[in-house]
Length: 249
Image 1 (cartoon, one colour):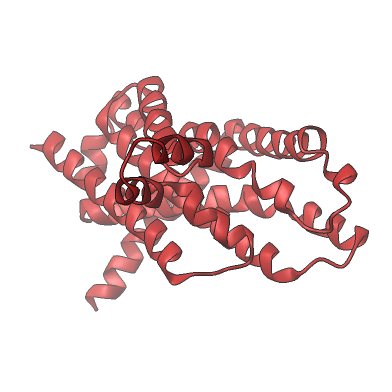
Image 2 (tube, helix red, strand yellow):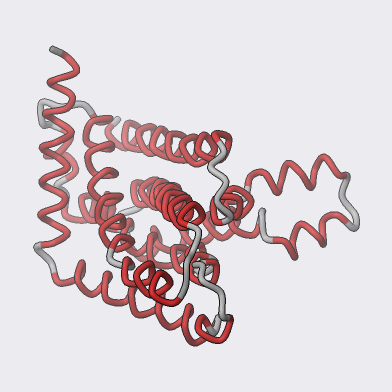
């Protein structure tokens, strides 16, 4: 009975947020920019056709860098807008828990980004038309990209709860997400290997998004990578709740 009530509350918040996304032209602009940039980087920067390979590695390698700016942009309004408009007090007085509101908002934003990601399906059709690609890396690449987007979104949701300024929320989220990207960026880990102990380099690399996403790009669906992204999402949403409880007090 309690679980049904939780699902009902989360579903209500989810529907409210999804309507807010698609009731605004910003959502369509976001999706258009996302698809255009994805196509630009894949075809013009990575020279997709010239590579002559029937796979999506040139496509997936740009996801972390596009998410670095686009996901915080999508997340910055989650709580900052409520704080600025003063509607946060109204939302938190609903007969639902703060955790249910956080999860409902997060799932709606994650679904929105998932829709944008799903609209890249012409890439799959293109690579299938050009050759005979292995479906494994494509499927795990999309799963990894969606999980990674959730981790970016968790960070953005947390920073949005910190301030009523969407710009500050965006900047904070970009800086934190940049740390998570650079922690697993091969040039950074190679530089660390020159002076840091091996265990420290391994720890820092293990914290990075790229270290866990790369294996999925190659078709490896490792439970440790799934748990990593799940842990980042849970931790950031938990921190989101602590911040809101502090502001409520």
